[in-house]
Length: 627
Image (cartoon, rainbow, N blue to C red; front, side):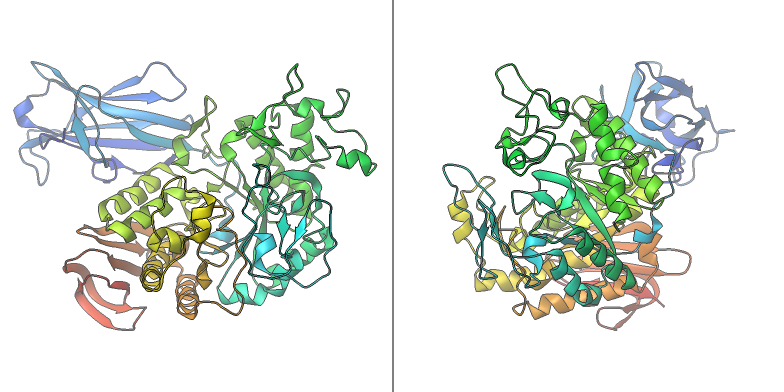
């Protein structure tokens, strides 16, 4: 339970300095206020290093004299300074001994102190960067392209066995299972040349980095079942097309990153070759499924009965052995896959299911990328708070400094949807502040802040669509569309969500078609064709306006963050540096509230001027720059 007798807040520099994640060898100062009524005999800081079994114990000294502590004259101030050397996670709480008991003090729902028999500990992240951060992404904008559905160049497509060529751009993807299996084998013709042709369009959205879904040879349209890491899928083009895309994008101020799918391969691959397709094409050596003598055999987990370990029980996705030296070298060696495609023009990688990559494999992968391009970017797919992630009995410690540069920021997405739909301003603010507290500053500046992905509902559907349950049938998803009222409502909701996405710390990521009003539930309904010529002009104009504002103000590169208001459905925060202050205000509640501004402010959305305060009304949004 909370108490006013013991005061501590890990996000307040009065109580902890510095706040947030810290660089190795930083000295941390802890201050805690304890009521005089408690007559404390001792106040101790108890800190457990994540790799140790026993905690360290530090006694806090009472401030000199009998003076009270600032605004709390009924409290005494206790302080201690601790220098932390080793990188990783530390968990801390306080113990206050009185004449009658020992009071345990830990973290409440937010960051303030509560007492109880077993309170939660606060988290302290400590890191030491081994590589320079990829500062070129700071203040930028990602654009996520699902290659087959973005734009077709019109090049002739050669039919391939088992694959269906769709001839009407914009038709619904084939979603009906065949013999109980979803084949994902229909293709609309989107390709790398088609993306290159649309680079001026992406430039009009102020995009600075194109994130491609997998481009390597594979059976499916999504390409997460890799057949050959060394070859661009013929449906998408050639290595020359990839190099041309990277070259022309760079001339327009854009980088390109690839999707790395290294936790598994496809069963229909030259490495596994369950169906003998690569053998029949004359590929040598034989795949692991066909021969126990295959050099790829140790890349997989086979059982005596001939079965094998699969990713999430999909037999088309045999799990790769990420501790096998020959596999590690194939992916991360000097002539490995990671370096090959950076040499071809990529600026880095987004790593699929990063949780399933052992830390040793991840370290080798990152080292390879940084050797090839010292400011390459490595972004991990992690759906939770990535700072304290445990997967497969391994603490990932992604941010120690030799692993991920940053992650896909799903926590922000969830909080934004909850806020826009339900007015959950307190949750919104706490989610942002928790991520900022747990993640190193360089990680925050590189966060991929998304609203939709190929794995989630389209954002306009998530905001305004019918709730059809957590596991709806494909028939229901195919038949459920936004009606006119939902469309009008969804556009307004999405405008607010985009304003948040573009002004919060991190780097926004536009999922292709969101800016045009593409709707849809889960796969494959979130992977429909881009509606060229049928874009929603209101949304597209809004995206262009907000992305232009974002890229015109340096405060969105590395500016600090401060919550101003988070209650009654109103969320207001400031991004600021030594030169500039811009406040985002969104009212998703039902009441008016005064927001203090301090001086004259111009609304970048409307050019209106406000002085000293803003009266935020239900449904309104503002972007206020101090003049």
